[in-house]
Length: 338
Image 1 (cartoon, one colour):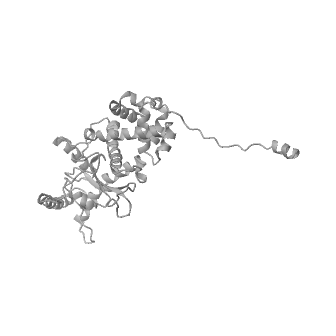
Image 2 (image 1 turned 120 degrees about the vertical axis):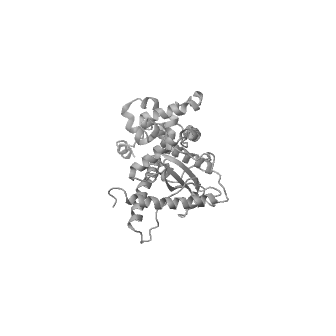
Image 3 (image 1 turned 45 degrees about the vertical axis):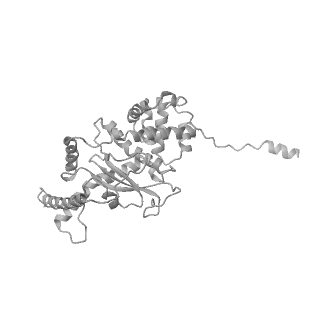
């Protein structure tokens, strides 16, 4: 026994890994230190300057006592960390050095305020000059005239809830089908959030925009139609790029939205759609030129007219087809197109 005890006594204890968890990061100090700029871009998906301007925009909506335990900037950082990553609240709270309960509360409040900012930062141009800026921007892209926006759709997966009927898309996933219009700068001009079971064409029926589509490629298109389709597709790439940037910047879209109710999931989507417009506005030091359908709601899926397309809608479709023919002939007369 003595021999065993002596031998046991000289056995060295195996070293264990130690994990260091940051406690109460001083975001207010970090945003003033240029050395942290890359950290902001990587984790909060924006520069230090943009983050500071965003804090100044949101802070008036919160009483000072609400963030007595942690400073206000930490709440904004938690929100951007949540939207910019696919991590849960527990991981975000650990990374930011706050409690999980405080993190959840701060993120929900910030998202609600961002939704309320929609009418202020996402609005229809009120003058012909503002529309002409968008039209001229698309004309510069590839020569497509009189274009006020590019449209496309994307699916956003959501959590299955107690009444998921009607929310499943063709992939068998519960989701939103989001149809959006953007301008030449990839700013979202309008977006429509519908159940995943809705098709793109069904969503478009209730839109107030007029669509000019491609010629159906049945293998018998002439040179004029192929040229039109090429210019049309090149112009439409703006909205595809806008969706790509949206999902890369806000990686919460990389998996099913963690919110357990439809209304909270809608608010998360709205916040993610509004934030790029606000950030671009800050980064460019320019005037926002964004459009949102005035009937879009914050608390849920917006209402629509059940009667479907009207006589006016069918007339608009005929006008759109006529415009397509006119553009086809015009493109063939442009220098270098023959």
